[in-house]
Picture 1 (spheres, one colour):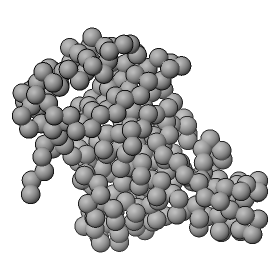
Picture 2 (cartoon, one colour; picture 1 turned 30 degrees about the horizontal axis):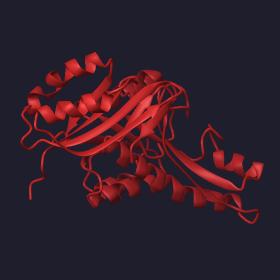
Picture 3 (tube, helix red, strand yellow; picture 1 turned 180 degrees about the horizontal axis):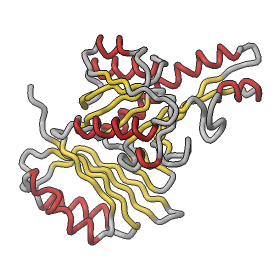
Picture 4 (cartoon, one colour; picture 1 turned 90 degrees about the vertical axis):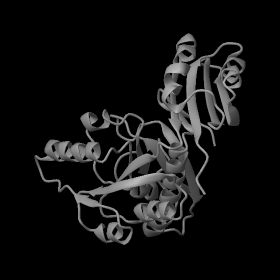
Length: 286
C-alpha cells in the first residue's frame, strides 16, 4: 500500500506570544490536518522551537508551492526553518574504518525497514568491511589515506557524495578526523558516535582514559560533527554501569553495545526530522 504523503516543519525563532496559534492557523486556513505537534521554549535565551507534521491530503497548497507560501510567515517571525516532504527520502552515506559493530547495527535496522531513507553508499579508508556491503548489496568505496593525501582523499569523497546526492553522513566508527573544509559541506548533517559520555574523555582512547580513572559508568555520545573535535551539538547519549571487577576489555565490550544503540537512535531522530540545532545545543522532539 502506498504511504500517505506527509510533510514536516522544523521551526525556531525568538519567542513571543501567540506563535503556536499563528502557525497553527496557517495550517487551518489551508485545510491542513496536523498529525503531530511539539513545541519548546528556552526561557533563558527566549527562543521558540516547533516541530509540526501534517497530512498533505486535502492540503490546499501543492507541494511545489509549499516553501514559497510559508516563507512570508517565517520572515515575519524572523525564523530559521525547513520543510521536508515524506516523498523526499534522505540519502545516506556510511563512513567506516575497521570496526563493524555500528555499521552492522545501521544496516540491520535499515534492512528491517526502521529507517525511511536510502543508503547510497559505504565509504571507507580500508577494504576490511566490504563483505558487509556486499551482503546488503550496497556500493562500497575505498579511499586510502596515506601521508600527504588527506585533502585529495576528501575531495574525491565529496565528489562521490555529490554524484550520489547524499544529504546525510553517518560516521559509524570512522577513525579519521574530517577537515573543517569537508564539514562545511554538510552542516548539522554529519552524525558521529563517540565512545564516551561527552564532554568527559574526549579525543582518542576514551575507554583507556576511563579505566585508568576508575570511573563507575561508561557512556556513548552521538553528536553532529563541527570543526571542533568532539564538541558538536549532542543528539543522543546513554550510559552503563561498571565496577572494579571490570577489565579494560570489559569496558570496551560494554561500551560497544552502547555505541551501536546510541548511534542507531540518533540516526532515527535525525531522519525523522526531530532535531533542531541552536548554537552548541539541540532540541530533540522524541
